[in-house]
Length: 377
Ligand code: SF4
Image: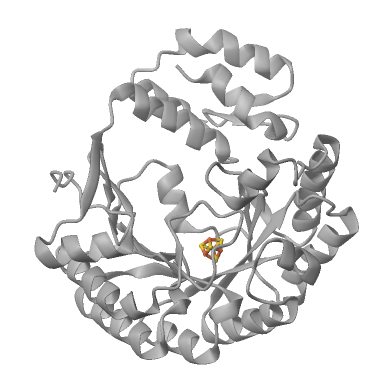
């Protein structure tokens, strides 16, 4: 285990890697089926959690995979074990991801009873033909029902959408965004479809069976999302995330601010005092490692100053607050290195300086990757 940092991290990520079906665009550490393994996995996960400090934690995030795939009794076992070990701060945020295909009132009630106060639902589209294309196991009606159940169970609910699907029209996306108004949601995550290496979509694109969305159309959809959500009071705070002020995902902000965090579960990554540790990705291997030795580390890397600085630029530019200039100075990135490049981007209207931060302008957001590469050391 890496040496714990001087001040105790306040954030904890827990991974449940199972899904009903592997979506063809997904490159997360998730695996379909293996229901018979779920109970052993929950025990292994709890065992790893018990090896971590008890807290208090400001944020806990159960992600996947599909945490709500666990049968209610097993989900309850997990939640009772977590609630028994973990201490939470007064104003804690505890999120659980849920898939509308395996979400129901019983599971949401179990989560809420043991401390979850925020649900993040993978809706992805409100159009059944797009849901079929994405290989989702739920219909748009089931997604609507799941959101209503989630709203009744916990105080904070977020819904994910995917934009940039081939053949997606502006009208369809506009109707997708109505979802947030209909359910009075205060947080939205809208991701652009990407074809990640190793996914079924990537292979299909290589075979010429799938094409990328036209870049001009993609840009229009991006503007539509930005404007449409802004009209609903959901302001962008990160490239793909929008919320009412004060309703941001504090857990994800901790990642983007480069804070330390604990993690447990198959493939879960923790970052403590400059050491990034990844656990065994395959759940069976993870379970065995925990059962036999108690440590499932698969890879441990010490992040050098250059990597940390690069990540500070990359993550900071994703945020609408931007990269902190005082943080750059503290990390040894002298203004003399980046100033002339930043100035060229400021002159081009892509970047601006605001409250001692460098941040992308609206015109710069679509070229975020290019700007980042230009500025990193
Ligand atoms: S439900 Fe989510 S985690 Fe599971 S395969 Fe689909 S996109 Fe990946």
